[in-house]
Structures are given as C-alpha cells and as structure tokens.
Amino acid sequence: MLFSRGAGYGLLCYLFIINFTLFYTKYFTGKYGCCTLPLQKLKLQVTKQKYIALILILGSLTALGPFSIDMYLPGFTAIATDLHTTVNKVSLSLSSYFIGISAGQLLYGPLLDRFGRKKPLYIGLVVYILASLGCALTTNIDAFILLRFVQAVGSCAATVASMAMVRDLFPAKDTPKVFSLLMLVVGLSPMLAPTIGGYVIAAFGWHIIFIILMVMGIGILLASRFGLPHTRNADPTISLKPKPIITNFLNVFTQPQFYTYALSGGVAFSGLFTYVAGSPLLFMDIFKVSGELYGWIFAFMSVSFIGSSQLNSVLLRKYKSEQLVYFGLALQCVISIIFLVAAINNLLGLYSTIVMLFLYLGCLGLTNPNTAGLSLAPFSKNAGSASALLGALQLGLGAMASVLVGILVKDSMVPMVAIMAGSTVTALLILLIGRRNIKELAENTDGDSVVMH
Image (cartoon, rainbow, N blue to C red; front, side):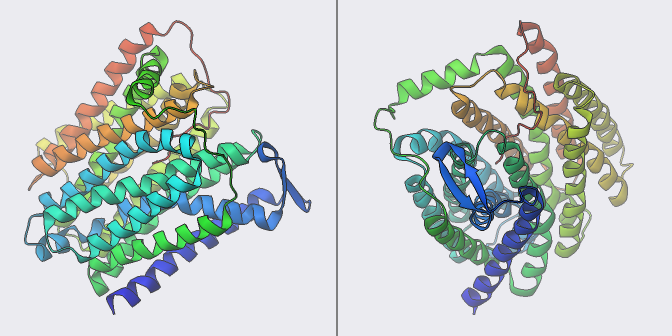
C-alpha cells in the first residue's frame, strides 16, 4: 500500500512539473512560428514538439533537487516522533543534504567533462533512487541523516548535467530563455513542495514522501535515457587527478571579482538556508502551526524571493548589478538588525514574524542573481569550473548555517535571527573590503546569470 500510494503521488508530482513547464515552454517558443528549431551547437534540426520535450526533461532534472529539499520539511515533527529523536536532530538531515549537494557540485563538473553527460547522470540518478528508498525504510535517525547525504550527492548530478546540456544544446541567443524557464521551475518548487508534502504527510505519514521522490527519480531517469540526445563525447585528455583540478579551482577563487562577489553573495545567501532549516522549528514547534498551514506559509514566503528576482530584471534596465548588490545588502542589514532587536525583546508574534521574513527574503532575491552574475563574468573558458565553485561555496556556507540552526534553535527564534543578521552584516563587510581589490569590473551584460542548486 505504501509503494502504490507513493507511486501515485510521485507520478502526479512529475506530471505537474511536466504540464506546468509545457505551458510556459509553449509561451516562450510560440514566437518561432516555424516547423523546425535549430540546435546550432550540435548542428541539428528538431521539431517544436521535440524542442518542448527537451525543455520538459531539463526542467524536471532541475526541479528534482529543490523538491527533495522542501517536500519533507512539514514532516520534521512526525519523523522525530517515529525515529525516537528530537526535531533538532532531524534538522541535521537537512544539513547533511546541503553538504552533499555542495560536494556534488565539485564532483560532477570534472566527471561530466571526462565521461560525457549521460553516464554520470545515470549513475547519479540511480544513487538518488536507492537513497530515497532507504530514507523511506530506515528506522534509525543516524542512518536517515547519512542517506540524505547520499541522496543529495545523487540528485546533484541532475542539476549539474542539466546546466551543462543547456550549454551543449542551445545557441547563445536562446540560452537566456532556457535558463529563465528552468529557474521558474526551481522557484516554483518551494511554493508547491512543502504544501503538497504537508497534506501527504497528514494523510499517509512521512515515509510516503520519499517513495514519491523515488518514483520521480525513476521517471526522470527514464525520460533522460530515452528523451535526451547525446551532447558530448567522453574526453580522455581531461585529467581527474586532484592536483590539476585543485589548481584550476584555485585560479578561479583567487580572481578578486570572483572571491568578492562569490563570498559576499554566498554568506548573504546562507540566510536563506538558515530560514529553510529553522522554519519547521520556528513555525511548527514554537508557533505550533500544523504541517498543512506550514506548507502554505512556506509557499507564501517563496513569493517574496521569486517576486524580487523578477523585479531585479526590471531594475537592471536602469541600474548596474554592483549598485543593486550594494543596495540589497544594505537594506537586508537594516531589516535583519530590526528583526533581531524585535526578537530579543519578544515583540514578534506569528504574523509579524512572517512579515519580517518576507522582507528579508525579498532582499535575497534581489542580490543573489547579481552576485552570481558578477562572480562568473570574468570567466569564459573555465566558466564551468567557476560555476561549480560558486555553487559549492553557496551550498557549503548554507550547510554550515543550517548545522548551527540544528544545534542552537530550540525554543526561541533568537538564535535563528541572530545567524541571519550575522551573515548579512558579514556579507556587506566582505563586499566593502573586496571591492577595493577589483581593478576593473567585468560585467555580465544580460543580467540573467544565476547559480541553480
């Protein structure tokens, strides 16, 4: 019964992603008005239907990681009860997942270049499927935390491979539309996944969430196997020895523009991970809301991040990226300090807390696309390594913040808000100091660069 219910809900989630992406893909591709679309890098001609199918599969690959993070969040209390532990200990499974996807960013970059796109993708998805099944069946919290790490390493293959395949498949003039579409799916998942998860957990228990994720992984594996073209041959000249890989990453990191904006953006963005890790404790343990209501609150918060990200595209018509980064971080500092003072003095109830978090996340949506774009702007030949390192920094810093949340947040929101405020002030200081070392700023003219995780 558990597997049949999980398969049903997994297929529904997968079909929703497919249909939602289909709707927007038709919108984006409708303007072509011709029967074939060029994939210039592979010198192929494909029909509009195949083009849409390709976008659907890439969108599904992109959405797998966010769904895996957000869907089980309403089940923290139920997992703690079932595994005879505390909610704080359960939150470490989220930290282990962040660590896994952080490490996976660095792992799959060289593997995808060395062995081609598909083989590492298949292996990663199989690992993800088996780890999801293990999470559903485990009865031990330590095993659950470890399996979440393994699950993250597997899911990371889907995200990294989808980005690499976009670069392989689509001409430069089309990649902004494709990445915008994929990011729309990523932004949608935190709105849907906790809400769906809350109702599923209330009806069938938390185990079913991981059966759903397993079925989604199987569907995406089959779609990738039969629907994605071969985009890159294996390259035996690429070394997998640690020394050249580390040297390449060091060359990227020591570029002043990269470390200034990657570190300031990553430290600021760790506030989002702090919120994600602390929100189940905050809303369900401290404010005693139900899992279903928590899902709706989480979805509402996502509107702030997504909305400000879209506002960023409008503001870039008038302002430069570095101006928006400075303004966003300064505003985020003011909001987080007010938030912290109010929390220390017990001035916040449920609704006022939601308002403060909404404003805080809005600032992150404004700064993140710009810090990511400015970090990657100096790189052309080694943009892949720069992207992998940027993602690893963001997720690694986020993992550290989420670990602190699991240790410190118990019966008060103050530690969570203090971490958010501290990370924001630190990010602003890194920006102010690092900008002095940038002799000439390389800019990304399209303003759409983002790192997907």
